[in-house]
Image (tube, rainbow, N blue to C red; front, side, top):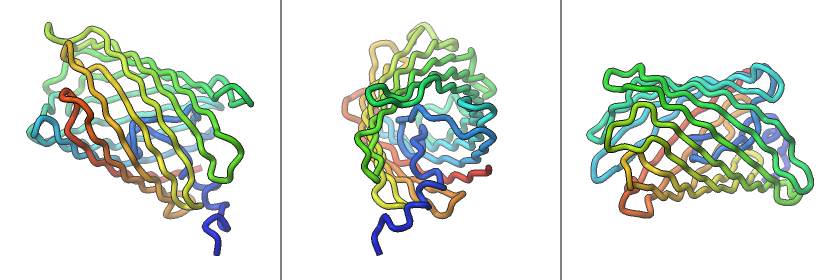
Length: 241
């Protein structure tokens, strides 16, 4: 039987979505469907300067209006690397304002607030993001390229840290079968400590277990001395419509 014979599974599940952390940094420009609710659990292991950090991110997303999406994420960290932001709460609103055309990508903007609910955190960080996604032809594999630009105002900075941080992510996604999708990206971002930047490449996969459940696995590798050494991440996502 052809790998594409059951293409309805890919259409009805969320396997083709490209979400931050599930399994890579890149995000597409498409919000959830109106009244769709996603409940997710994300886990990431990071190796930073020979120290380990474990990141746990329970997350809820909801399409509260046509072309709008809300996301609420808890940020929990353990390990020997910096865990000062553990316990913080992140809230995000995303708005898609143009659909994809023949020559024009789908475009969306989002606003993110990181609220210092953790014990050692202070100051509210705010982020604005521009997201773009464009299909490459009409193949059944749905190949797409994605671009994200982020600007973060670092409200909780110390004297050695930047006021503002910028980041760029470029990525690619495609279905490999009706139940399996590939996601790859490269991101460059300024780190809070002045003079430090990070360059990372990532590769990940999303696997549909059913129409409502998707699991993901990805890994990343740092390319310069300021970057993390490596990370691996996995997630499980359940969708309710």
